[in-house]
Image (cartoon, rainbow, N blue to C red; front, side, top):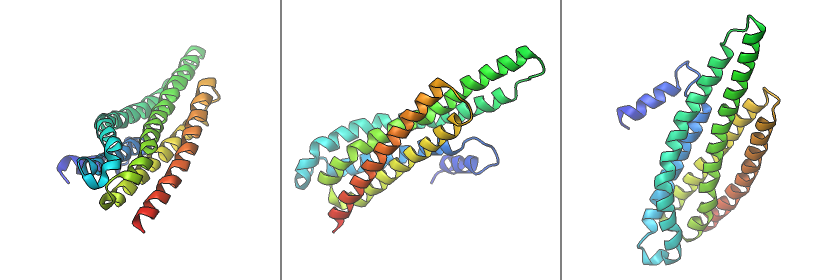
Length: 205
């Protein structure tokens, strides 16, 4: 581990609210992308895994960009949480200030819910491709695929929880939509992780 990696962990473990769970969800997803890409690279060009060539090539192309998206979402989540905290610190000593503060809180909260929703969407995208790689990819790397899938699922779950905690604080139509979408993605991801776990178990027997 280099100093930069250790610095990130030090920042997370500090008494600052950011980076927090949403950011960690995105960072976790970036690790899932990296592991999936590794499994794919260990599959490409191997005759023994000829049935997995197409999905492996697709995942290599996908994960290269998706990993960058995950890292961007990690930064976006920390910024979104900071915006919420800033909104709650706005003055409220007059009627006008109260209205401005309320609108700022709503806008910031929508942003703070939208970012983990995006993390969940990205995690689900990866999970949806892993069953095929699990079935036809290099079996010598099946535990790495398992690790990738578990990390991707965890990122979806953490992101879903972060959506939920934000939308529960304010009644709003847009927040309700975000919550419903995140919940559906989470449920779909639960089905996918169960499928992948069965594939991993069968290929390890």
